[in-house]
Amino acid sequence: MKKQFDLKRGMMLMSCALLLGSVTVSSCKKDKDNNKSMYTISGNANGNQVVPSVTGNGTGSITGTYDASTNMLNYNVGWNGLSGNASSVGFYGGATSGANGTQIGNNVTITTPGMTGAATGTMTLTNAQEADLLAGRWYYLVGTPTHSTGEVRGQISTAAQ
Image 1 (spheres, rainbow, N blue to C red):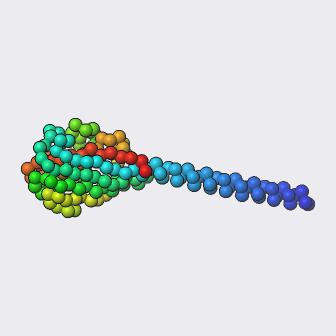
Image 2: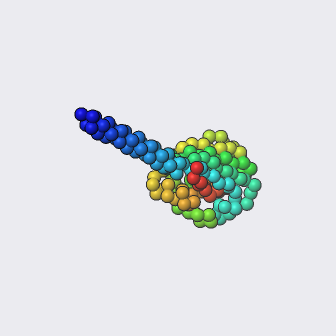
Image 3: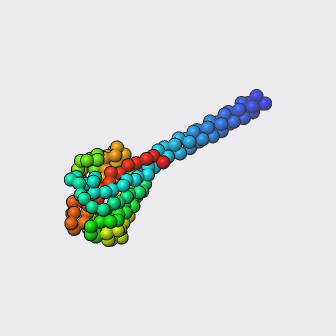
């Protein structure tokens, strides 16, 4: 009877140890995957990056995050020194610095209009758009009435968090 009790107790202890070990391992793996799915985005803009280049004092910057697990991009585009009020802000993909790409979606909403202003928002990316973003093939443009195809442009960089 005692041997049967010790065998049951041993099996129970082994089962608990295996369960605890698998929970610990899967928890660590999940944390590791989540860390790799978060990225910060950044990039500075000016007229020299527009194709063809634009002469002026305008500058811009972008900051934000990209969560690869949800495909959600959060962005904050700011600009100042434009020749006129910003009339459009857009994202473009499939191009490295010095080349023109294809517009991604519609122009984004300008949240603070003016010669100095901002556009803040979110967008959900496709897998192909994600691949271009993470490969450095995205840029943003801020247009004005004088330069409707872009007064300042900035290539977007990503860095894993």
